[in-house]
Image (tube, rainbow, N blue to C red; front, side, top):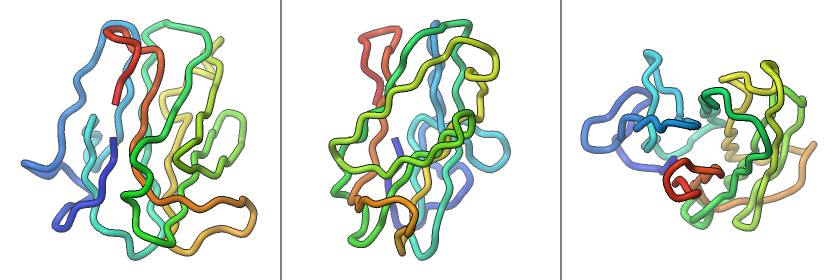
Length: 148
């Protein structure tokens, strides 16, 4: 999960961020400065476009996964969010109802740096959609089939 928070930085923020808690079948985290992997990533309020790198480790798992986006209303008014898939070279505009499915079936589609979350304060002209939020969920989760 990513959230806006006054005083947050691009690195690890004590009492704001949470280290990744790896599972036994697939892992998802935000990459912070210094190769730190975070389950909860507090970011400073947006004044310009920000790209949050997502780190995926499927631990050999293949199949269809999905992102869903929660609490989108917590983003600043006028902020637009996009999910960039570097493997498929696709950019998806996000809102609170967005579900993005993707398939992992080989080493290229399982690339750890396949996805980026782009938060833009001005919007982009090539993709339509406005957002107001910041939660990310990936399925399946090895524990309860739901990870936030």
